[in-house]
Length: 150
Image 1: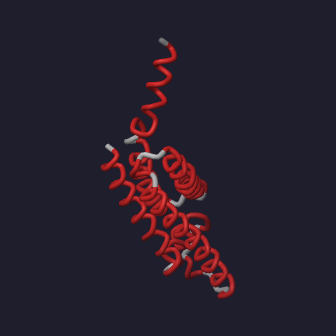
Image 2: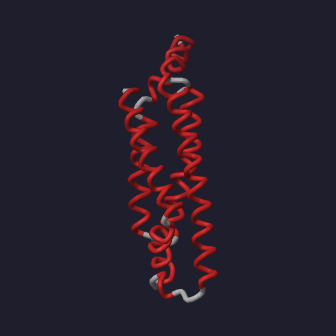
């Protein structure tokens, strides 16, 4: 199960990387969906170029942070997760869990269906990949606890 989980997490991280790169390279694609969900208007209706520039910059910064999390995820995945080290499982659970959860909650809050679908796909890949091999990470603790009970 661990090998399958690693493959699923590689796919998820690649998917997250593409999403993050899109946020950096073409932030208006991501912004358009959220803007329309919040205001009901197209992003083209905004006449203030300074506002659009600042909005794009803030999304680019968010994309850079997301790209950093993706890179961290790859390092943790290959340094410890594929070797069934508990610290790596917890690191991925916390770092990637916060990232996907925050993105999902944010898109739900603004009722942004387009970005919500993208976040749900990533979240499902993440949850399957992280929980599929959970026995391989924590089986020793369960066996030790069972021995102590008898």
